[in-house]
Image (cartoon, rainbow, N blue to C red):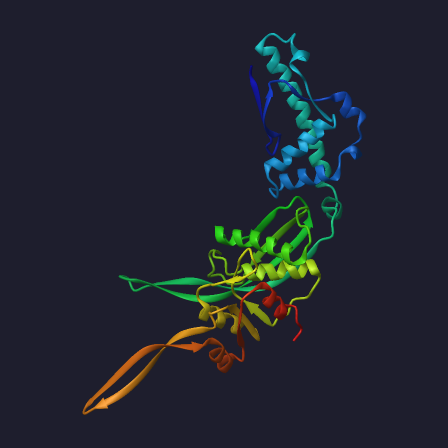
Length: 340
């Protein structure tokens, strides 16, 4: 028995199915009897998001299966086509039915594309933003050797909460790595644990922008804590204190994990104008070289050794910014959701 492979493309439909050839067809009588208003909004939403690349093929195929279950689209059993004996007849029938399905799809797509945004989402959108601190490398070469140094910079992260199917998306013009995407998913999980709000019927979209033209990519999990603060505050309707910045990964149990480049990140936060900079527990100190000199006759000897220095004392003396260690997301929220 032959099998059909349908494909939905920008000018048609792409569906992968094991339905026997010519068994998938629009019932034209049913299509004429049903008004466009009988198609649920979630079907239209799914078609719009799929056409814009905001949902996956599985969600779109589930929507098409729903139309089949509701007798908008029909599958024909083998007994109904037993009299079609030649392969040519079967292919002609398949083409006719495919064309009907394509017309129906294009009509549906046109409807959802012309729908107002409020009708498409059918939800209350809540958008908030937070600033996060990251580091990036600068490669320098003297023609023979390359050296890398690190600078801190600021990202702006916004979150958009809308009715959906539990998708977690990261929208950015900057290339992103796997760690960043994992942090977004963990942030949603922890925000659910903190607020008790069911997010399985919501789509969470994080968008990341920066004014720094030297930043070529985003990776690592150091913005995970900030994303969790952002989403939790949006769900609870709490404002975010713009004088507070943080760095730190987010763990599934809500603890704040370690990061790298804490000094460079603190300098970037201070340059941004932050009054309080939150860092993971144990990372509120940095190593600096402490040197002493001694003179013996005509010779001056210098001896240097690393010493741990409080990062807060450095930042307060230079910029007036406090550096505070935090262990959990609950500790972090006390600072971000406070007006002090």
